[in-house]
Amino acid sequence: MSMPDKSTARAASLYIHVPFCAQKCAYCAFYSESSTGHLINRYVSALIRELEMIADDLKPRTIFFGGGTPSLLNLRQWGRILHAMERLDLLGAEEFTVECNPATVSTDKASLLRSFGVNRFSMGVQSLDETLLERLGRIHSREMVFKSFDALRRAGFDNLNLDLMFAIPGQTLETWRATLAEALALGSEHLSSYEVIYEDDTPMFAQLQAGEFDVDEDLGCAMYDELVERATAAGFHQYEIANFARRAKANESTVHSPPSYRSRVRTVDCGQATVDLPAFACKHNVNYWRGGSFYGLGPSATSYVRGVRTKNWSNTQLYCEQLEKGNRAIESHEELPPLKRAGETAAFGLRMVAGWPFEEFKRTTSFDLRREWPAEMSQLAGRGWGEILSDSFRLTPRGLRFADAAAEMFLR
Ligand SMILES: C[S@@+](CC[C@H](N)C(=O)[O-])C[C@H]1O[C@@H](n2cnc3c(N)ncnc32)[C@H](O)[C@@H]1O
Ligand code: SF4
Image (cartoon, rainbow, N blue to C red; front, side, top):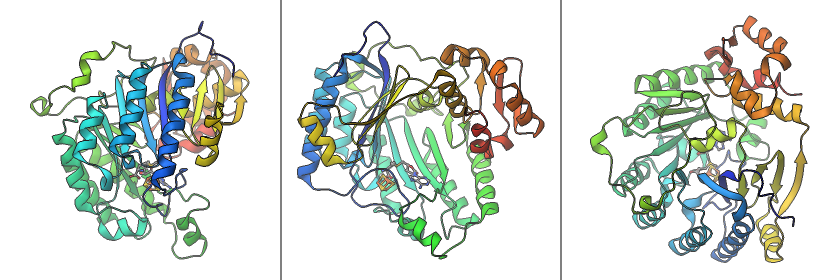
Protein backbone atom coordinates (compact mmCIF):
# COMPACT_ATOMS: atom_id res chain seq x y z
CA MET A 1 0.00 0.00 0.00
CA SER A 2 1.34 3.48 -0.83
CA MET A 3 1.86 5.86 2.09
CA PRO A 4 -0.44 8.87 2.37
CA ASP A 5 0.92 12.12 0.95
CA LYS A 6 1.65 14.15 4.08
CA SER A 7 2.26 17.33 2.12
CA THR A 8 -1.51 17.81 1.86
CA ALA A 9 -4.01 18.28 4.66
CA ARG A 10 -5.09 15.25 6.64
CA ALA A 11 -8.75 14.19 6.40
CA ALA A 12 -10.85 15.66 9.20
CA SER A 13 -13.80 13.31 9.08
CA LEU A 14 -14.06 9.64 10.04
CA TYR A 15 -17.02 7.29 9.48
CA ILE A 16 -16.98 3.78 10.91
CA HIS A 17 -19.53 1.23 9.73
CA VAL A 18 -20.65 -1.41 12.23
CA PRO A 19 -22.29 -4.10 10.08
CA PHE A 20 -24.42 -5.87 12.68
CA CYS A 21 -28.07 -5.66 13.69
CA ALA A 22 -30.09 -7.76 16.10
CA GLN A 23 -32.62 -8.27 13.29
CA LYS A 24 -32.96 -6.84 9.80
CA CYS A 25 -35.74 -4.23 9.42
CA ALA A 26 -38.20 -4.73 6.55
CA TYR A 27 -37.18 -1.56 4.64
CA CYS A 28 -33.45 -1.38 5.24
CA ALA A 29 -30.79 -1.83 2.56
CA PHE A 30 -27.78 -0.69 4.59
CA TYR A 31 -25.18 -3.42 4.73
CA SER A 32 -25.67 -5.31 8.00
CA GLU A 33 -26.42 -8.80 9.23
CA SER A 34 -27.48 -10.40 12.48
CA SER A 35 -24.41 -12.07 13.84
CA THR A 36 -22.53 -14.10 16.42
CA GLY A 37 -20.08 -12.86 19.02
CA HIS A 38 -17.20 -14.55 17.19
CA LEU A 39 -17.62 -12.56 13.96
CA ILE A 40 -18.11 -9.33 15.89
CA ASN A 41 -14.81 -9.88 17.76
CA ARG A 42 -13.07 -10.64 14.49
CA TYR A 43 -14.55 -7.47 12.96
CA VAL A 44 -13.27 -5.41 15.92
CA SER A 45 -9.71 -6.71 15.38
CA ALA A 46 -9.93 -6.02 11.64
CA LEU A 47 -11.27 -2.53 12.24
CA ILE A 48 -8.40 -1.72 14.61
CA ARG A 49 -5.99 -2.92 11.90
CA GLU A 50 -7.70 -0.65 9.37
CA LEU A 51 -7.54 2.30 11.79
CA GLU A 52 -3.80 1.71 12.23
CA MET A 53 -3.32 1.84 8.45
CA ILE A 54 -4.88 5.26 7.95
CA ALA A 55 -4.26 6.97 11.32
CA ASP A 56 -1.32 9.03 10.02
CA ASP A 57 -3.54 10.59 7.38
CA LEU A 58 -6.35 11.51 9.73
CA LYS A 59 -7.03 14.24 12.26
CA PRO A 60 -10.74 13.84 13.01
CA ARG A 61 -12.83 16.88 13.69
CA THR A 62 -15.93 14.69 13.35
CA ILE A 63 -16.36 10.97 13.99
CA PHE A 64 -19.52 9.01 13.22
CA PHE A 65 -20.13 5.36 14.11
CA GLY A 66 -23.06 4.24 11.96
CA GLY A 67 -24.51 1.04 10.73
CA GLY A 68 -25.90 -1.31 11.24
CA THR A 69 -26.26 -0.88 14.95
CA PRO A 70 -23.10 0.35 16.69
CA SER A 71 -24.87 0.17 20.07
CA LEU A 72 -24.99 -3.62 19.61
CA LEU A 73 -21.26 -3.88 20.41
CA ASN A 74 -20.67 -4.86 24.03
CA LEU A 75 -18.58 -2.98 26.60
CA ARG A 76 -15.47 -5.06 25.90
CA GLN A 77 -15.69 -4.56 22.14
CA TRP A 78 -16.21 -0.81 22.55
CA GLY A 79 -13.33 -0.68 25.03
CA ARG A 80 -10.97 -2.31 22.49
CA ILE A 81 -11.93 0.11 19.71
CA LEU A 82 -11.78 3.25 21.86
CA HIS A 83 -8.44 2.33 23.45
CA ALA A 84 -7.01 1.73 19.98
CA MET A 85 -8.29 5.12 18.84
CA GLU A 86 -6.71 6.73 21.90
CA ARG A 87 -3.37 5.02 21.19
CA LEU A 88 -3.54 6.24 17.58
CA ASP A 89 -4.36 9.81 18.66
CA LEU A 90 -7.74 9.75 16.93
CA LEU A 91 -9.87 10.94 19.84
CA GLY A 92 -10.78 14.49 20.78
CA ALA A 93 -13.16 15.21 17.89
CA GLU A 94 -15.36 18.25 18.15
CA GLU A 95 -18.36 16.07 17.29
CA PHE A 96 -18.35 12.32 17.98
CA THR A 97 -21.64 10.56 17.16
CA VAL A 98 -22.75 6.97 17.76
CA GLU A 99 -25.93 5.59 16.17
CA CYS A 100 -28.09 3.48 18.39
CA ASN A 101 -31.20 1.38 18.40
CA PRO A 102 -33.44 2.07 21.43
CA ALA A 103 -33.33 -1.65 22.31
CA THR A 104 -29.56 -1.72 22.74
CA VAL A 105 -28.76 1.35 24.84
CA SER A 106 -27.43 0.79 28.36
CA THR A 107 -26.22 3.21 31.02
CA ASP A 108 -22.86 1.44 31.29
CA LYS A 109 -22.23 1.71 27.55
CA ALA A 110 -23.34 5.33 27.43
CA SER A 111 -20.97 6.22 30.29
CA LEU A 112 -18.04 4.38 28.74
CA LEU A 113 -18.56 6.09 25.39
CA ARG A 114 -18.89 9.47 27.03
CA SER A 115 -15.65 9.01 28.95
CA PHE A 116 -13.85 8.58 25.59
CA GLY A 117 -15.32 11.76 24.10
CA VAL A 118 -18.53 10.58 22.42
CA ASN A 119 -20.76 13.65 22.69
CA ARG A 120 -23.69 12.90 20.40
CA PHE A 121 -26.11 9.98 20.01
CA SER A 122 -28.41 9.37 17.07
CA MET A 123 -31.35 7.14 17.92
CA GLY A 124 -33.35 5.20 15.32
CA VAL A 125 -36.92 5.74 16.52
CA GLN A 126 -38.80 5.59 13.16
CA SER A 127 -42.26 5.68 14.77
CA LEU A 128 -43.94 5.81 18.15
CA ASP A 129 -46.88 3.72 17.00
CA GLU A 130 -46.61 0.08 18.12
CA THR A 131 -48.42 -1.29 15.05
CA LEU A 132 -46.12 0.58 12.67
CA LEU A 133 -43.00 -0.42 14.61
CA GLU A 134 -44.02 -4.01 14.08
CA ARG A 135 -44.83 -3.36 10.43
CA LEU A 136 -41.30 -2.00 9.99
CA GLY A 137 -39.75 -5.02 11.69
CA ARG A 138 -38.27 -2.96 14.52
CA ILE A 139 -37.11 -4.81 17.63
CA HIS A 140 -38.08 -2.08 20.09
CA SER A 141 -41.29 -0.77 21.61
CA ARG A 142 -42.27 2.89 21.98
CA GLU A 143 -41.58 2.58 25.73
CA MET A 144 -37.94 1.67 25.01
CA VAL A 145 -37.54 4.93 23.09
CA PHE A 146 -38.54 6.99 26.13
CA LYS A 147 -36.41 4.89 28.49
CA SER A 148 -33.31 5.04 26.28
CA PHE A 149 -33.71 8.76 25.72
CA ASP A 150 -33.84 9.28 29.50
CA ALA A 151 -30.85 7.00 30.04
CA LEU A 152 -28.78 9.03 27.56
CA ARG A 153 -29.80 12.29 29.21
CA ARG A 154 -28.93 10.88 32.63
CA ALA A 155 -25.53 9.80 31.29
CA GLY A 156 -24.97 13.49 30.45
CA PHE A 157 -25.58 13.66 26.68
CA ASP A 158 -26.80 17.09 25.63
CA ASN A 159 -26.75 16.53 21.88
CA LEU A 160 -29.24 13.87 20.80
CA ASN A 161 -30.76 13.14 17.40
CA LEU A 162 -33.93 11.19 16.69
CA ASP A 163 -34.54 9.47 13.33
CA LEU A 164 -38.15 9.24 12.20
CA MET A 165 -39.70 7.79 9.05
CA PHE A 166 -42.91 8.84 7.34
CA ALA A 167 -45.17 7.56 4.54
CA ILE A 168 -44.89 4.12 6.13
CA PRO A 169 -47.45 1.71 4.64
CA GLY A 170 -50.53 1.88 6.86
CA GLN A 171 -49.56 5.23 8.41
CA THR A 172 -52.25 7.91 8.41
CA LEU A 173 -51.76 11.66 8.74
CA GLU A 174 -53.14 11.32 12.28
CA THR A 175 -50.66 8.65 13.40
CA TRP A 176 -47.83 10.68 11.86
CA ARG A 177 -48.98 13.80 13.73
CA ALA A 178 -49.11 11.85 16.99
CA THR A 179 -45.57 10.45 16.53
CA LEU A 180 -44.25 13.88 15.57
CA ALA A 181 -45.86 15.54 18.59
CA GLU A 182 -44.44 12.95 21.00
CA ALA A 183 -41.00 12.96 19.40
CA LEU A 184 -40.83 16.78 19.44
CA ALA A 185 -41.95 16.81 23.08
CA LEU A 186 -38.86 14.76 23.99
CA GLY A 187 -36.82 17.90 23.31
CA SER A 188 -33.91 16.47 21.32
CA GLU A 189 -31.38 18.85 19.79
CA HIS A 190 -31.68 17.34 16.32
CA LEU A 191 -34.29 15.55 14.22
CA SER A 192 -33.82 13.60 10.97
CA SER A 193 -36.90 12.45 9.14
CA TYR A 194 -37.00 10.52 5.89
CA GLU A 195 -39.85 9.41 3.67
CA VAL A 196 -39.73 5.63 3.22
CA ILE A 197 -37.55 4.64 0.28
CA TYR A 198 -38.44 1.30 -1.29
CA GLU A 199 -35.01 -0.25 -1.71
CA ASP A 200 -34.49 -3.23 -4.02
CA ASP A 201 -34.11 -6.56 -2.26
CA THR A 202 -35.96 -5.56 0.90
CA PRO A 203 -39.11 -7.31 2.17
CA MET A 204 -41.03 -4.04 1.98
CA PHE A 205 -40.11 -3.57 -1.68
CA ALA A 206 -41.30 -7.12 -2.40
CA GLN A 207 -44.61 -6.35 -0.66
CA LEU A 208 -45.04 -3.24 -2.79
CA GLN A 209 -44.26 -5.22 -5.94
CA ALA A 210 -46.79 -7.86 -4.89
CA GLY A 211 -49.46 -5.16 -4.69
CA GLU A 212 -49.97 -5.49 -0.92
CA PHE A 213 -50.24 -1.70 -0.66
CA ASP A 214 -50.00 1.43 -2.82
CA VAL A 215 -47.81 4.47 -2.46
CA ASP A 216 -49.87 7.63 -1.92
CA GLU A 217 -47.65 10.49 -3.08
CA ASP A 218 -50.06 13.22 -2.01
CA LEU A 219 -50.15 11.81 1.50
CA GLY A 220 -46.33 11.70 1.54
CA CYS A 221 -46.26 15.41 0.58
CA ALA A 222 -48.81 16.29 3.25
CA MET A 223 -46.69 14.43 5.84
CA TYR A 224 -43.56 16.31 4.75
CA ASP A 225 -45.41 19.65 5.04
CA GLU A 226 -46.59 18.64 8.49
CA LEU A 227 -43.02 17.74 9.47
CA VAL A 228 -41.59 21.09 8.38
CA GLU A 229 -44.42 23.04 10.01
CA ARG A 230 -44.43 21.22 13.35
CA ALA A 231 -40.65 20.99 13.69
CA THR A 232 -40.31 24.71 12.94
CA ALA A 233 -43.06 25.57 15.43
CA ALA A 234 -41.19 23.49 18.03
CA GLY A 235 -38.08 25.64 17.60
CA PHE A 236 -36.12 23.57 15.07
CA HIS A 237 -34.34 25.10 12.11
CA GLN A 238 -34.48 23.08 8.89
CA TYR A 239 -30.99 23.14 7.37
CA GLU A 240 -31.30 20.21 4.94
CA ILE A 241 -34.23 18.46 3.25
CA ALA A 242 -34.58 15.88 6.01
CA ASN A 243 -32.59 17.47 8.85
CA PHE A 244 -33.59 19.89 11.58
CA ALA A 245 -31.52 21.25 14.44
CA ARG A 246 -31.85 23.66 17.32
CA ARG A 247 -30.05 26.96 16.97
CA ALA A 248 -28.83 26.78 20.57
CA LYS A 249 -29.62 24.91 23.75
CA ALA A 250 -33.25 25.72 24.60
CA ASN A 251 -32.64 25.88 28.33
CA GLU A 252 -29.04 26.39 29.40
CA SER A 253 -29.81 25.09 32.89
CA THR A 254 -30.30 21.59 31.44
CA VAL A 255 -26.71 21.44 30.16
CA HIS A 256 -24.95 18.62 31.95
CA SER A 257 -21.44 18.59 33.32
CA PRO A 258 -18.75 18.28 30.64
CA PRO A 259 -17.44 14.82 29.79
CA SER A 260 -14.24 13.86 31.52
CA TYR A 261 -12.49 13.52 28.18
CA ARG A 262 -13.14 17.12 27.23
CA SER A 263 -10.07 18.38 29.09
CA ARG A 264 -8.05 16.64 26.36
CA VAL A 265 -10.12 17.88 23.42
CA ARG A 266 -8.07 19.69 20.77
CA THR A 267 -9.07 23.07 19.48
CA VAL A 268 -10.27 22.49 15.94
CA ASP A 269 -11.63 24.90 13.38
CA CYS A 270 -15.22 24.63 12.18
CA GLY A 271 -14.46 23.34 8.70
CA GLN A 272 -15.10 25.11 5.45
CA ALA A 273 -18.87 25.70 5.52
CA THR A 274 -19.58 29.42 5.40
CA VAL A 275 -23.37 29.26 5.50
CA ASP A 276 -25.27 30.04 8.65
CA LEU A 277 -25.97 26.73 10.39
CA PRO A 278 -27.87 26.07 13.61
CA ALA A 279 -25.58 25.23 16.55
CA PHE A 280 -26.71 21.59 16.65
CA ALA A 281 -26.48 20.87 12.91
CA CYS A 282 -24.65 17.56 12.35
CA LYS A 283 -21.14 18.72 11.41
CA HIS A 284 -20.22 15.28 10.12
CA ASN A 285 -23.05 15.25 7.56
CA VAL A 286 -22.48 18.90 6.63
CA ASN A 287 -18.97 17.86 5.59
CA TYR A 288 -20.48 15.24 3.21
CA TRP A 289 -22.93 17.68 1.69
CA ARG A 290 -20.16 20.26 1.27
CA GLY A 291 -17.91 17.90 -0.68
CA GLY A 292 -15.34 17.50 2.12
CA SER A 293 -12.92 14.60 2.46
CA PHE A 294 -13.59 11.70 4.78
CA TYR A 295 -12.36 8.25 5.62
CA GLY A 296 -14.97 5.49 5.86
CA LEU A 297 -13.86 2.29 7.58
CA GLY A 298 -15.59 -1.05 8.04
CA PRO A 299 -17.43 -3.27 5.53
CA SER A 300 -19.25 -1.37 2.74
CA ALA A 301 -17.94 2.03 3.86
CA THR A 302 -16.94 4.65 1.31
CA SER A 303 -13.99 7.05 1.61
CA TYR A 304 -13.38 10.24 -0.32
CA VAL A 305 -9.85 11.49 0.05
CA ARG A 306 -7.97 13.86 -2.29
CA GLY A 307 -10.56 13.40 -5.01
CA VAL A 308 -10.45 9.60 -4.99
CA ARG A 309 -13.50 7.62 -3.93
CA THR A 310 -12.95 4.11 -2.62
CA LYS A 311 -15.40 1.55 -1.34
CA ASN A 312 -14.75 -1.35 1.01
CA TRP A 313 -16.12 -4.84 0.42
CA SER A 314 -19.72 -5.26 1.58
CA ASN A 315 -18.94 -8.61 3.13
CA THR A 316 -17.73 -8.84 6.71
CA GLN A 317 -15.90 -12.17 6.27
CA LEU A 318 -14.02 -10.86 3.25
CA TYR A 319 -13.32 -7.57 5.00
CA CYS A 320 -11.78 -9.44 7.94
CA GLU A 321 -9.77 -11.79 5.70
CA GLN A 322 -8.25 -8.88 3.78
CA LEU A 323 -7.22 -6.99 6.90
CA GLU A 324 -5.86 -10.15 8.53
CA LYS A 325 -3.57 -10.43 5.46
CA GLY A 326 -2.44 -6.83 5.96
CA ASN A 327 -4.43 -5.35 3.05
CA ARG A 328 -6.97 -2.55 3.04
CA ALA A 329 -10.35 -4.17 2.23
CA ILE A 330 -11.02 -1.97 -0.80
CA GLU A 331 -13.35 -3.30 -3.50
CA SER A 332 -13.27 -0.31 -5.87
CA HIS A 333 -11.45 2.95 -6.63
CA GLU A 334 -12.85 5.81 -8.64
CA GLU A 335 -11.18 9.07 -9.56
CA LEU A 336 -13.68 11.39 -11.19
CA PRO A 337 -12.68 14.06 -13.71
CA PRO A 338 -12.71 17.46 -11.89
CA LEU A 339 -15.83 18.84 -13.61
CA LYS A 340 -17.79 15.68 -12.95
CA ARG A 341 -16.72 15.78 -9.33
CA ALA A 342 -17.76 19.45 -9.09
CA GLY A 343 -21.18 18.56 -10.53
CA GLU A 344 -21.68 15.94 -7.84
CA THR A 345 -20.58 18.39 -5.18
CA ALA A 346 -23.09 20.94 -6.51
CA ALA A 347 -25.85 18.33 -6.46
CA PHE A 348 -25.10 17.21 -2.90
CA GLY A 349 -24.84 20.73 -1.52
CA LEU A 350 -28.20 21.73 -2.94
CA ARG A 351 -29.83 19.42 -0.41
CA MET A 352 -28.97 22.07 2.14
CA VAL A 353 -31.50 24.83 2.66
CA ALA A 354 -28.80 27.50 2.34
CA GLY A 355 -27.77 26.12 -1.07
CA TRP A 356 -24.31 27.02 -2.38
CA PRO A 357 -22.52 30.32 -1.71
CA PHE A 358 -20.69 30.93 -5.01
CA GLU A 359 -17.35 31.67 -3.33
CA GLU A 360 -17.46 28.56 -1.16
CA PHE A 361 -18.30 26.38 -4.15
CA LYS A 362 -15.33 27.83 -6.03
CA ARG A 363 -12.99 27.28 -3.10
CA THR A 364 -14.17 23.67 -2.76
CA THR A 365 -14.21 22.63 -6.42
CA SER A 366 -12.21 25.29 -8.35
CA PHE A 367 -15.26 25.77 -10.61
CA ASP A 368 -17.66 28.70 -10.75
CA LEU A 369 -21.33 27.69 -10.50
CA ARG A 370 -22.34 30.83 -12.45
CA ARG A 371 -19.99 30.03 -15.30
CA GLU A 372 -20.56 26.25 -15.57
CA TRP A 373 -24.27 25.91 -14.79
CA PRO A 374 -26.00 29.23 -15.68
CA ALA A 375 -28.68 27.57 -17.82
CA GLU A 376 -29.56 25.03 -15.14
CA MET A 377 -29.82 27.69 -12.44
CA SER A 378 -32.02 29.91 -14.65
CA GLN A 379 -34.24 27.00 -15.57
CA LEU A 380 -34.75 26.09 -11.92
CA ALA A 381 -35.41 29.74 -11.02
CA GLY A 382 -37.94 29.95 -13.88
CA ARG A 383 -39.78 26.93 -12.54
CA GLY A 384 -39.90 28.39 -9.05
CA TRP A 385 -37.63 25.63 -7.77
CA GLY A 386 -34.47 27.75 -7.39
CA GLU A 387 -33.40 31.21 -6.32
CA ILE A 388 -30.36 33.04 -7.71
CA LEU A 389 -29.15 35.48 -5.02
CA SER A 390 -26.28 37.96 -5.29
CA ASP A 391 -23.87 35.61 -3.52
CA SER A 392 -25.46 32.16 -3.69
CA PHE A 393 -27.84 29.76 -5.39
CA ARG A 394 -30.37 27.75 -3.42
CA LEU A 395 -33.49 25.69 -3.89
CA THR A 396 -36.80 27.16 -2.79
CA PRO A 397 -38.98 25.19 -0.32
CA ARG A 398 -40.84 23.84 -3.39
CA GLY A 399 -37.57 22.98 -5.13
CA LEU A 400 -36.36 21.11 -2.04
CA ARG A 401 -39.30 18.71 -2.45
CA PHE A 402 -37.92 17.84 -5.87
CA ALA A 403 -34.28 18.10 -4.88
CA ASP A 404 -33.28 14.81 -6.51
CA ALA A 405 -34.58 15.95 -9.91
CA ALA A 406 -33.06 19.43 -9.46
CA ALA A 407 -29.71 18.02 -8.36
CA GLU A 408 -29.55 15.68 -11.34
CA MET A 409 -29.39 18.68 -13.66
CA PHE A 410 -25.91 19.51 -12.28
CA LEU A 411 -24.41 16.09 -12.96
CA ARG A 412 -22.01 16.01 -15.89
C1 LIG B 1 -28.59 3.09 9.13
S1 LIG B 1 -29.94 3.49 10.07
C2 LIG B 1 -29.12 3.41 11.62
C3 LIG B 1 -29.94 3.51 12.87
C4 LIG B 1 -30.08 2.25 13.69
N1 LIG B 1 -29.50 1.13 13.07
C5 LIG B 1 -31.56 1.99 13.86
O1 LIG B 1 -32.18 1.75 12.85
O2 LIG B 1 -32.05 2.04 14.97
C6 LIG B 1 -30.15 5.23 9.85
C7 LIG B 1 -31.53 5.71 9.54
O3 LIG B 1 -31.83 5.62 8.18
C8 LIG B 1 -33.23 5.63 7.98
N2 LIG B 1 -33.57 4.65 6.95
C9 LIG B 1 -32.99 3.44 6.76
N3 LIG B 1 -33.53 2.83 5.67
C10 LIG B 1 -34.48 3.65 5.18
C11 LIG B 1 -35.40 3.58 4.08
N4 LIG B 1 -35.45 2.53 3.29
N5 LIG B 1 -36.23 4.65 3.87
C12 LIG B 1 -36.17 5.73 4.65
N6 LIG B 1 -35.34 5.86 5.71
C13 LIG B 1 -34.50 4.83 5.98
C14 LIG B 1 -33.86 5.29 9.33
O4 LIG B 1 -34.53 6.42 9.84
C15 LIG B 1 -32.65 4.96 10.18
O5 LIG B 1 -32.81 5.33 11.52
S1 SF4 C 1 -32.68 0.37 10.08
FE1 SF4 C 1 -31.03 0.22 11.54
S2 SF4 C 1 -31.59 -1.56 12.87
FE2 SF4 C 1 -32.86 -1.70 11.06
S3 SF4 C 1 -31.71 -3.09 9.72
FE3 SF4 C 1 -31.18 -0.97 9.11
S4 SF4 C 1 -29.36 -0.52 10.23
FE4 SF4 C 1 -30.28 -2.33 11.22
